[in-house]
Length: 52
Image (cartoon, rainbow, N blue to C red; front, side, top):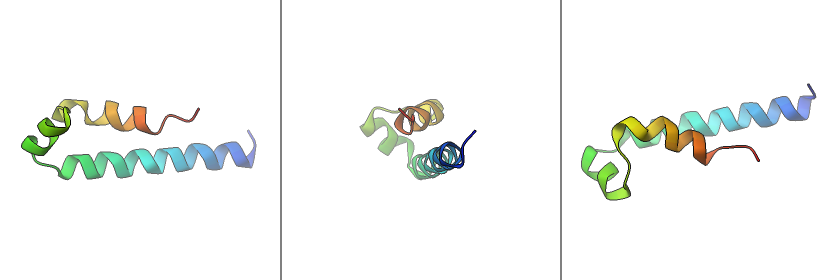
């Protein structure tokens, strides 16, 4: 695996973790306003950083 691909995967993982952390800080009401359930946070974060 090339360094470029490893760096890309690492950056995607970091963006995922940041997304999970930020979404987890929201109240249930704020998540509801966004149409996200607390149980969907990891799915939404994973989908948002999918490397194309």
